[in-house]
Length: 448
Image (tube, rainbow, N blue to C red):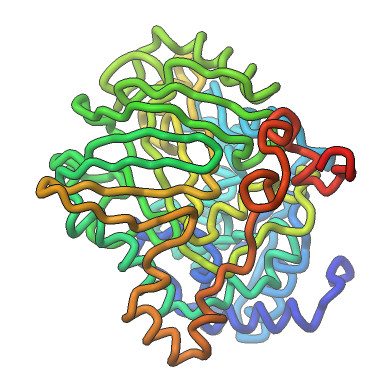
């Protein structure tokens, strides 16, 4: 483990994860901090860990060491992730948009979002592995156990957000999901954010009976789906504007404004190189009819995903491809990330690839969102206000937190984004024109 600067800490973290139960409910499962667990592994099990070469080796080597000591046989695949380099404004598009089919091309298909390497799955099935540890988003249905490898950096692997008490996290997720699932049928949702986002949509009753959309009684842990995934309902009515400077995998970009009409992005303004790339795709796909969409075009809203872990913090560096950019922070409680485009891997995406059409989805982050849910009787619930989950102040949540320690410390958010004119003194307008220095740590006093 010569790449690890904190060998003992990495092994201790791996031992903790090896004791955690595996989270076996596939459709409520995402590879969020606090939900990795390899506790079903027993002596004689065959385990595959699959990463690419941009991933720091501390996590996979520590996990392999601990599982081997417990009697498992562990192999590690390190695929070529390319030369590390400074992250750019267009890396989100490169990471998420594809044009080739993924079925039948497992050996050559370039994974999106570093989710999975399809050829690895073939190896796992061929060699009869019991457990695959791979992916930063969510596991795919399989005949073997599949757990996540959520960490790009050693810093992320050692972060205490991975050790947030799972029963407490479960309760936070349930409390934050109830306003939608238990009480939201037919309600109007309005989402605003301090950077200028303001859009609304209806929680259609059909959402409660459509399967396969991550919208179900069991919350999608750490990634609460306040809007269902595809297929997109023809009656959906999302309208408004989306504004921001952050996405998953890109260098922070000048403020982008996206106009949302009848559930689809119809105009993209600003956004630097990211905005230019998005506009080009918007124009290219505006007359294409994708499966699972009620009309033409690619960029339909479906992902309104809420983070739920108060201990997640941004890594100390987000400037290189190997850092994963700003993806990690989407897990922090109260942050919403929005997704527009196709979801997958899916049959609809494979068909688009066979036609040579672009597919995939791109994101925008809302760091200080407020969510208002207006019910038919006129009552209003606010499950998120200025980026804080109301669930963190729920009496039952605080009572359970007291069983683990001081509720104030356990439920206190460990990180806040530093943006001038919003969370720190300064001029937001100036920040919005050139946000990268503030996030990459290169701004000067003159820029403040």
